[in-house]
Image (tube, rainbow, N blue to C red; front, side):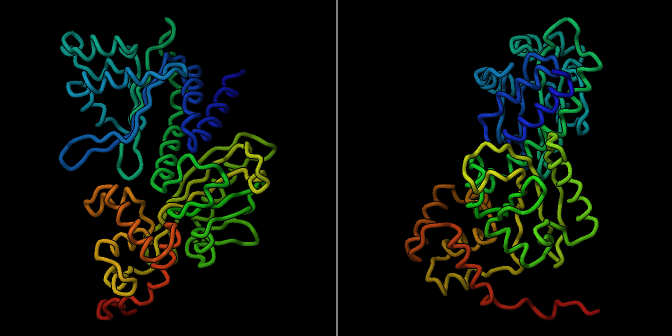
Length: 390
């Protein structure tokens, strides 16, 4: 296998891993092989207002073997006193550095993290990279020591550089699926998600199927629309970018597709939404998904008007808390996002939601969203005095 073949295999496996965690060990092993490294740690997190770092997920594998015990040991014993982390967090996006260069001369002699921890984890001679993640978050890729005495040759560093955008895309899509509560779903099951728009494309880029949220968005032609089965963007610059993403995801003659993302502007004066295009392998026997070659994930296509919770409360006979949760759900928030936004626990939000289901005699989040959205016209009009004149 040539290095180009190996790289294309990495991209294909990362595309699969975006939807299925079980594929990550294979992707990690291929990356280790291509980069000539013993292993790696991929972490994704954010820093809170208090300065504490929240790790959303972390993956430590060495040549496909799970080293989560090393990961737990590092976070327990070394992470609180690791001198190089502050410098790593300040690195420019995508800059590749030797981990030793992130420790001072004195620290390389005295640091327990550098001399004990990193040596134990085979990372003392490794590389570090920081990437900008979704919505200001950070992605950190720690690459373990080289497998041999050749060190970090120019060709190995170049392979690391080539992998970076695909690792970023893996985190983007995986995070979007988790927020939409659709991570781990099959190609056909993704159509049932209610928290994101989902469009299935065939090999020639034609729309095969779309879920209810995506169909409404296309019907209103607000940012995206369906032109004879082809997916188009309303804004000319966005349409050109979308065409490029689709061409890369669905190359001719069966070449390896590449995942990509963009922001889509809307016709109305609302925030745009993120769009992720990801090639998929045809592994499912279901006749409805056999022709699917790529998935378009549309994240947070917000509704046009703000729905007033007190209106929903009065009409549906809900409590203030139940009405608030119902409105946030209809606006496309996940249960985890609602919990964070309202200061409630996830279990409390779920308990309120079950009570709403019982009162309205429904059983699905999508049904509740439909009920709330159908009442949006009852919300009071915005203050006309704030309208602008031409």
